[in-house]
Length: 366
Ligand SMILES: NC(=O)c1ccc[n+]([C@@H]2O[C@H](COP(=O)([O-])OP(=O)(O)OC[C@H]3O[C@@H](n4cnc5c(N)ncnc54)[C@H](O)[C@@H]3O)[C@@H](O)[C@H]2O)c1
Ligand SMILES: O=C(O)C(=O)C[C@@H](O)[C@H](O)[C@H](O)COP(=O)(O)O
Ligand SMILES: [Zn+2]
Image (cartoon, rainbow, N blue to C red; front, top):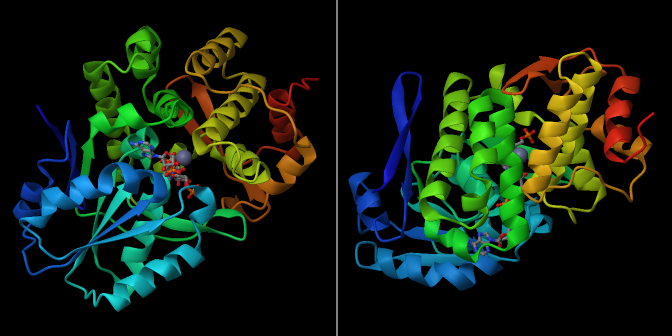
């Protein structure tokens, strides 16, 4: 049975998040949304996902939508940039895409962020839908309309809030996802529990075995609960004026580690490290007990995430953290935990306090 989560903005349902076990229902969903046979569709995918799923999706759609085009780019974060966007613009122009046509992001967060940004800007905006295929993109990046690309090594520096018309996921594609990418997804999932729902964090602990064994029903419940948390936050604050910033828990330091690793460490792993640093700072602030910090560390470890890292200089990490777009004046907007399951925005941390958190994940606790 498919699961359906509507996303409401300004009192109106803007799109639905559909959790299914195949791509078969996609053509029907598009028809229900009013798309017609004379509209062109451009499927954007990366080199890994295209090989596995582009043909299948194309075949499913062709009967109802005969004008299907596929564009593929090299997989990886290094492709999430304006050069790749230019390539997509060219392809759309060459194939005469107009404002009534549709783009489909078939892939992980890189494909989703890049396709969404291209859709937001091509002809001042054409429709797009998200068909997320990585765990991370199913639980996080396909929802909420943050689109964008990296610029000069700065994460997500150029982008737009632009909502998809549909988020349609086939959970069975997780079977082909490499293990390290599954682990990356756990980073954002555990983040959802830590910022908003401690019971969900505990549920993850209790269901670790079934999750790691990819038991379908448990995975479906996990993805659903995570989508629910993210959906609720972005509905209340679509443009990150307040509460949505909590979704950045672990990202302030995490983005710096990600950049400094030259994107060699996955997004979710870096978010995990950032969450450990932020949890340590939360502990130093007197919010979390040492036992709570240890429990968070153990949980991340069980799901294959890193809790310590090496190879970078903590001072460089602090410097890079301070180059992030989340700076307000000279102050970093930092997300801390009041308690597991309840996060808040802290704008008054000193460099020394942040550095302590960074030192902690580099195994150099004072
Ligand atoms: N917009 C948002 O709200 C948001 C939220 C979280 C993360 N992000 C962004 O998302 C990106 C990370 O996304 P990601 O982790 O999906 O990375 P990704 O898109 O690079 O995908 C990870 C890898 O898995 C492969 N892959 C994807 N689905 C597969 C499948 N079913 N089978 C086999 N291989 C598959 C991809 O080809 C890629 O090699 C980052 O750029 C991050 O900044 C955005
Ligand atoms: O949706 C959000 O809001 C998030 O912050 C989700 C994050 O997991 C995601 O990595 C997001 O892309 C970070 O956005 P940024 O604005 O900090 O670059
Ligand atoms: Zn993230």
